[in-house]
Amino acid sequence: MTTPFSYDINPARIVFGPGTLARVGDEIKRLGASRALILSTPFQQADAQALARQLGPLSAGVFAEAAMHTPVAVTARAMAAFDAAGADCVVALGGGSTIGLGKAIAYRNDAPQVVVATTYAGSEVTPILGQTEDGVKTTVRDPKILPEVVIYDPDLTLGLPVAMSVTSGLNAMAHALEAVYARDRNPVASLMAVEGVRALQGALPVIVADPRNAAARSDALYGSWLCGTVLGTVGMALHHKLCHTLGGSFDLPHAETHAIVLPHSAAYNAQAAAAELRPLTALFGGDIGGGLYDFARSLGAPLALKDLGLQESQLDQAADLTVKNPYWNPRPIARDAVRALLQRAWEGTRPQSS
Image (cartoon, rainbow, N blue to C red; front, side):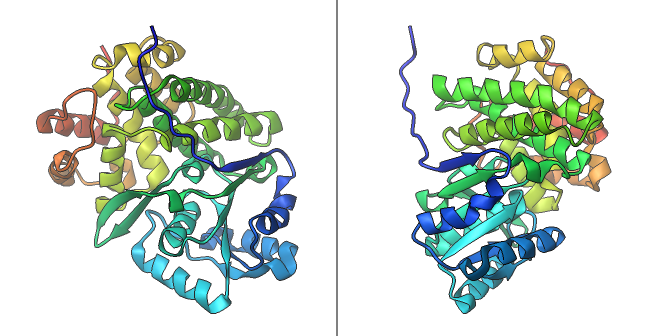
């Protein structure tokens, strides 16, 4: 018997395939817009400027100050640039930092958004915004935050550095893992979650060995879309609370933090959510925490929070912040257990799920 459930489908338009970057202008016009402010990080500014030239009169200029964790101060500058340029929509070219900035703008002025995703972040298909102010990262969910159009062009990921490919892929997997045991889980999201993890599990080792393998890049982008989609349709749990705390309060890099914490949060919930995790546990050799750790290590992913600059003396504060206003979780969130989890993640110790 199927358990009763509810399922809200987020109404984003997905354009997937090689060469789809050329369709950005068509999608802007399809939204009824005519002046797009193009967003990027400083690192991708040249790509954003090239896109502006491609768009010609549809471009209202480039704002290339997107930063990790979507600082409110950066959003304020972007809003001023949007108004000064007479823009009527945004095009976010990049990964989570740039996508977050576009969502922050839309949350404030309801500007239509086109996202050109160049990493495996997944946030482009969620109505969720995480933003940071005064060292605290908070999240908000609102229909205005969901981008109207997402373009996935695997050609744009061929040059994505291997290290960034690995950590953003593991970040995407984290969304799927928490989706299968979410309080508001449903069979559709769970199917998408398992398929997304399967696609990324197959693609990431190939990308490490052959970074310009077009088929693997396409599979990884497909997997990240599925994982991001479930992030936008069900609630998240301890893993995301940990990562929001570590990123927002200690300024740790987003994807790397997800990659390190994932095996440990999975191990924490392995017994309490054993039935829900069973399809994913099978993919990782019967031990979800240890299997994810071994997989990450095989890809050369970072394994220890201390390597990201977190001090051991900060772990008590991190534990305290994590258990303050905790997210729902299948296993009760106990301060001492969370502190022990953080210690293992800080040291880079292999977790045991059973």
